[in-house]
Image (cartoon, rainbow, N blue to C red; front, side, top):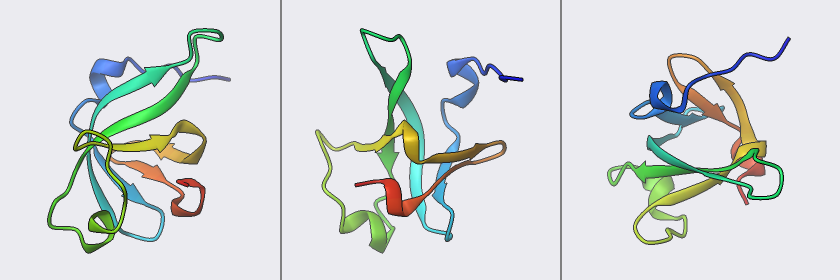
Length: 84
């Protein structure tokens, strides 16, 4: 069974990697025009995170492919290995 989540409920949720790195807060998403499916999470980066400082940011935001999302609950958990 597919569980649907309203995007408004995701805004402001902390985004963390499965191995414990705090990436920041979810602020927006990109949706594929062709399929209508979520393709990318846009994250306001945690500037205090050493891990985030090593990543390339686009317009001051961090883009994470939706395919790396492992779970959504109190946090959005992503697989760091699939973020490339």
